[in-house]
Image (cartoon, rainbow, N blue to C red; front, side):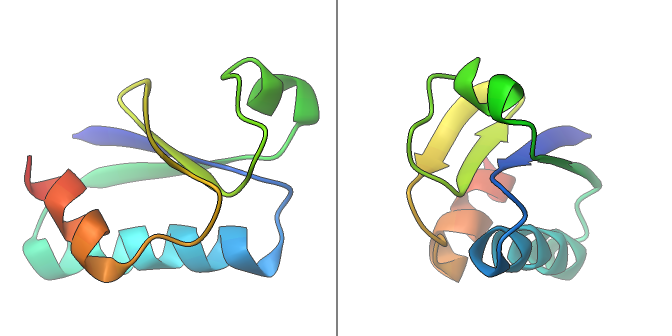
Length: 78
């Protein structure tokens, strides 16, 4: 199971990112755990200045906007 963290304040873009990841994982039949990290000190611990950001298994794979579906599918498939 992949552990995926969506870093952000809980804004609409952050929620859209989390939903996109969950929906994509469901479509691929992949089990994931999506966690929303909203505390500024926890976001800063990753060195992220632009949100939403996505961390998969403790590796930052995206920051600064909602990823597109193709990107998410690629992350989940690898």
